[in-house]
Image (cartoon, rainbow, N blue to C red; front, side, top):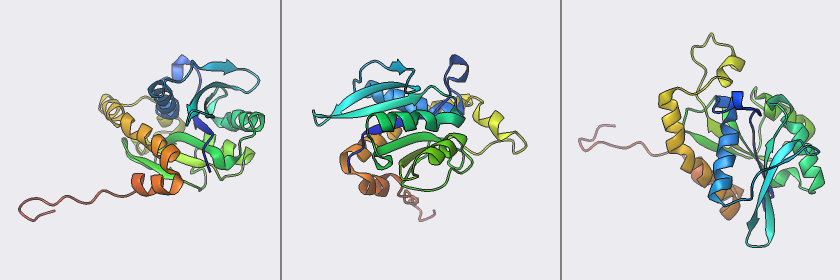
Amino acid sequence: MRFRLIVGLGNPGAAYEKTRHNIGFRAIENFARAKGAEEWQKNRKLKGEITQIEQDGTEKLYLLKPTTFMNESGISLQKVSSYYKISPEEIVVIYDEINLDVGEVKISASGGPGGHNGLTDIIDRLKPTFVRVRIGIGRKTPKEIDLADYVLGKFSEEDETLIGASMERYLDCLDRLLDEGLEKAMNFVNRKPKTKQREDGQI
């Protein structure tokens, strides 16, 4: 089955730019630029900013940034998928994942929201059969900090550098999903790198 909609999650507005919660927006914006997509168009009816590219010169691939706040992300997905007659299985959602280190990325075909409010709302409004691209933002530190404060905070300078260096990898995930399909993309992206052995035989 071909994917017809890729969604990046985030919060709208300049105040939330470059926060951890908006990594989905950043990834899809970079993907759109890399593919030479049309300019983003705000659609009030569909509650999102939308652009599109062509797949194989014929089929349209829609890219979406919901303009609702994160905890109501499902509203826009529901409207867009209904309007364009896109099934949940044809949707890829990109979002921030606190259970992955900064710079890591994983593809999942199912699963619960894991405490992510945007994902919770999407699952409540659609079947949970959409594909997830989970971008690591690191576990909250210090542990005492409120989760909302952590995800709405900005990356450290060091982490920001790592995010920039990893962006090509995030976009490669999307390319592999589109070109190779879910199973092959998951097998490649999710495989754990082998532990390198030193010349003296030590790990």
